[in-house]
Image (tube, rainbow, N blue to C red; front, side, top):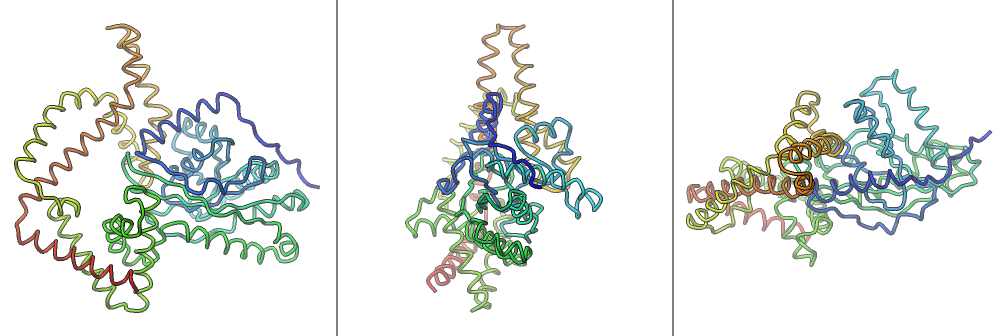
Length: 454
């Protein structure tokens, strides 16, 4: 006997207000810019849809996917340990549609029984024409590569179809998350969707050979995600490949006629670089080994000198640096003002994160959840009361309205200070060191051009 499916969910007004607040914090404060690529591939509301994505950045991945939707409330199956941060975090995650998945390698075999309740509920939800999000790697990666897939998502999708007597067409939509940088704020984020895959052609095969049907669907889904994302398979030489794609991606994008400032276009260029290197690794491994050696040497010299490849090409002078320092000094009083609420908004989550988690990929989760859910509302209340008592109530409202601008300024001021320090270090570096680094850069660029033309 099939279970009664849940109907298409119509979240109330409070959900949309809450989501609008979180999306503003996500899209305007936490990230500098967000992108949704191929959003037209998302089927219309009411279609039973399972979105399957790579997993790289803890809670940031499901949040990015959730905020890419305007017309529905997707449910996300995500790792159970993020629900243990605090009771407040648990209620928050469930309120925006996240549900826990327990894994044998993390929560233990005894906890796996708890998945049955989650999966049964999501099967009914899926049959009702709702959207489910899952991450088949069953844990996030800390690098740009695709891990091993668990078949849990295919099992759930086919079991949902079976519960509905195979009368409903269920779709799987592959997707990928991509970041300009995993750590800190004011980076860029994108979600890119592939093309939907119908399970209907596999229903008959599933009835007789369920595992074979799951394997075939999984192969289609995985292939799409590999094509969507940046998949650096040479994990042994990841540091060298990552250094090259980060520093030459924009240049290659420009030669391809793409927008060098847009993350989706840079991703396409970086994929070209990685694909060329991985192909050459098979055909001419000695050339690639030499490229890796040059990349590692240049990376080491830059880190030792204390600046980046970008500063290496700058032609600044002590006079220009003096003007930058005077500008920073002039803005110092404003930066001091901006430390409320910026300093505690950063320091409190980071202190908690370092005490509770060893995994660095939880850093973004701590910053987002603590600030959006707890700290900023608390700081706003404190600010309003203090300003009302000492000045007037409307001054408190103005101060609170300036929170986003103050936080962004505080972060950018620190970035300007760091850039100025790197600039000064570049000017003080020995000329022979600069010449050696520029020669290495030229050599890497030439080798890369040869690989890309093959």
